[in-house]
Image 1 (tube, rainbow, N blue to C red):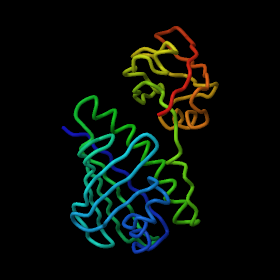
Image 2 (cartoon, rainbow, N blue to C red; image 1 turned 90 degrees about the vertical axis):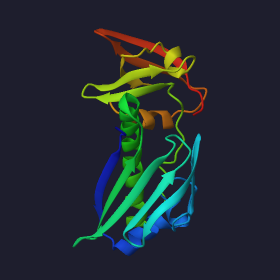
Image 3 (cartoon, helix red, strand yellow; image 1 turned 90 degrees about the horizontal axis):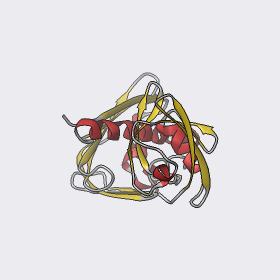
Length: 226
C-alpha cells in the first residue's frame, strides 16, 4: 500500500486569496520552493527547485478556488501526487494538503515522515506570507547532508540506513543507533536535525552523540554539501 501524508490547517483569509498562494508562480515561490513554477490548468507544467533537488511535474485537475492537483514526475519521490483542497469557513479558509504515492512498506513510511516534516515547515512559511506579506525563506534554506536515513520514534530519531563514506558513517553511526545531538544541539526529530544542519556549512567538523543499545558514544565528522 502506498504511503501518503495529509495536513489540514485554517487561515484567516478568503479562499480567493489562498488560491493565489497555491496557483500562481510568483505567489508560491514566496513560501514553498524558490522557484516554484506552476501553470494552473490541466496539463500545465509544474517545476520547482530546492537546494540539492529539482522536480518536473504536471497539473492534473483544477477547480478554481477549490482544488489543485498535480503529479511530480521527477525529484525526490518520483510519480507522487499533491492535492490541495480549499474550503471556506466562518474564520477564513480550511486548507487540506494530501501528498500521495510516497512508496510502499518501510521506505514509504520513512518518506512519509520526512515529507510530513517538510510540509510543516512549508506551511509555517505560507502562514508568514499570507499574514505578513514577507517571504520567510526558512523552508528553502540549504541544509547539509547528514549521510543517513532516520525514523522518528517515541525515543527520538533512530538511524535506519547509513550512506557509505558520508557524514554519519565517518562519525561512527550505524543502523539502530539513536541520535542524541549534533554539534552540541539536541536532536529528537527530523526538523531539529535539519535546523542544526542549516546552521553549519560544508567543511565544518561537528561532534555527533548517539546511543548504541545502552552505550553512549560520540564521533566527529566533516559536513559535505547536500
